[in-house]
Image (cartoon, rainbow, N blue to C red):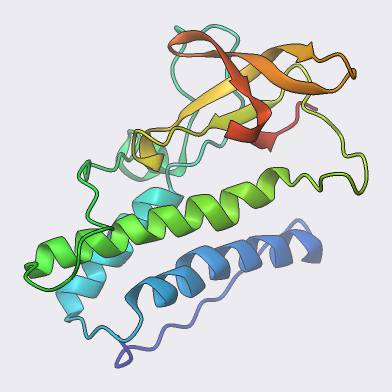
Length: 202
């Protein structure tokens, strides 16, 4: 991995603040996280290419548009639609992240690294999209119309659903901790701790 040097150049016409945000996000997800996952493991060119390609599929699966109110409508466009004409899905449904490397063949070792990337990305990056500092200060709550990622510990992150908030359920203290969502499966009721906000309607 250390034999190849990559230099990334960014041209963003909308202003420096957007360029900085995009470049920081790209560096965090595509450079920093893979280094943490690979560590000191020696990989061949084909193996590192496989790993980076699957990470690209992860990053290129994020929606570019807002969900429709109709769950029967097509899914939002992602960068994958512009690359191959359809969404990029993670075909790796087997979780190797808890297995030891000893005895694994090289392909399973790469899949373990991809699983570890998914876990770190979902825990460290997605959680930053909707930070809540408990008991310190009041933060803006989810509002009707917000688009969110619905966390599900039982399926790979690449298959997590997108949903739109259609109803808030406030508790006795007038604080919303549960919302009703509309997604392609219909209506779901989820706690806000299992949601990551993507965008707010303009």
